[in-house]
Amino acid sequence: MEEVNRLLVFTALGKEKADLVVKNATLVNVYSGEILEGIDVAVKGDRIALVGKADHTIGDKTKVIDAEGRYLCPGFLDGHVHIESSMVTVAEFARGVLPRGTTGVFIDPHEIANVLGVYGIKLMIEEAKRVPLKVFVCVPSCVPASFPEFETAGAEIGPKDVEEMMKWEEVVALGEMMNYPGVLAGDEKVFGEINATLRAGKVVEGHSDGILDEQLAAYAAAGITSCHESTRKIDGIQRVRLGMYAMIREGSAWRDLAEVIKCYTEGKIDSRRLILVTDDRHPEDIVREGHMDFVVRRAIEEGVDPVRAIQMATLNTAEHFGVERDVGGIAPGRFADMLILDSLTKVKVNTVIADGEVVARDGKLVVKIEKMEYPEDAKKTIRVKRVPEPEDFLVRTSPDREKVKVHVIGVVEGKVVTKHLIEELPVVNGVVMPSVEKDVARVAVIERHRATGNIGVGFVKGFGFKEGAVASTVAHDSHNLLVVGMNEKDMAFAARKLIEAGGGMIAVRNQEVLGLVELPIAGLMSDKSLEEVCEEVEGLERAWRALGCELISPFMTMSLLALSVLPELRITDKGLIDTVKFRRINVIAE
Image 1 (cartoon, rainbow, N blue to C red):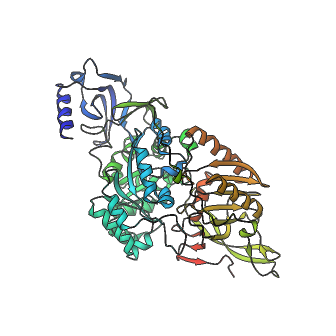
Image 2: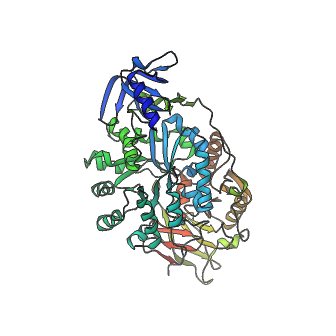
Image 3: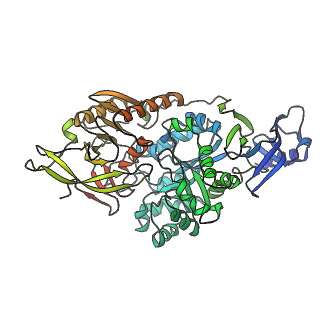
């Protein structure tokens, strides 16, 4: 780096000529909060040498881009994302987000880690080295996400693993600490991971859904400095007041920005502690709406000044993770990750520059990104004791009963939370039946990592299904095989098809496949192109609608039914989990 600094100095003085100069730009200066006209930026290698007037840095071999007065801003950073949730590999994800202006991401690969452990993380890092997208890694903190008595995971990562991974140059943080009850209880494993991170001088990411006041203060006191689970104005306010960064997400399923951004637009708290994130976006949404450009645009639509909105997706993020000397702004010494915008308020990206090279123009990638072939042992991850039969999905009670009250998971559209409901359902020959009239379907989780034979069964309300079944091996965070349906035969058929495919998502009716997305890599990601996966996902969306579901991004809503650290009621391979009182409960409520 010492020689690079010397070269940048000489370039700024004109003693060396720049490799690239962007001229006549209207600079969005995220450091000063200003918009400055007539600015040039000179680049040597992959870093910025000068911001100001750059004619003296232009030589015969200098590439010059005339911005013609258009806006120039830093490349966008996604401060919290799980690439696996896009259902494509790192390379295909980069192909999708770079043209939309995302030049850096802070990934928590806990999806693949819950299936393949540290090995899965290494695979993601290896592929990330091949792409022009900067990939900063947050070591998964919750593998498994909760206690072993609640679910069966595919792997385990402990304090010694975290301590070792903190030495990796790609690692900048400990990923979201979802086990907030463990934090508040002083759990030894939890604090082993937190302390290993703090000793390494790196940050600890939070996940503190709904907690406030003294509980939130206690959570922050552990050394946790961010949270992306804010869903209310007060969540954002309290986290910032306690010295945390409040991450505001606008993903495919969880659309929290409109409410949480009020902590700034109405509450007037300092915007420098606010970070915009996706947490996560499906491939078709990236293609149709965008990635971080979409989130920044949404913030502006909700009344945020464009410069502040861009700060929330660049400098704020970089400062939180301690990488502001490299990314997050357009200034000497930083990596030359810059966007030329046709419109500031509409966040229309014209040109994307990453590491001093033009990588995209007018929404199209102009460089080739190399794909990595994932090894076979990353693709053979479906291990079940036996293929489930229709009878495995039934909830039984006394045959002399006509009705029975049951605990039901109530999904909330566009939110990660569920409701713990009590519903009265009919009983036929001792079998508790689903109800189209009450919008209550069957739900089951089949363990698929260790061939235990575990199958948890229950009921869920809110998907709108009239018939058929859907299934998925994307089931946060342990990613067992999750099935929702109105009849047991379709549920068994859907499960069998996914087992044969090596993982994915499916919709069926009358034992006929209506839509299928095959995800053979860890049961989470496709080895196909982004465009092919988009086509398959759109076909699956149509299939869900044909079965009666009209929810926004229903796949993500379904995938969280098994996440046993989020309130209020969830289901795992070990049954129903009351995630408020943290206990297993029976399906029958009486």
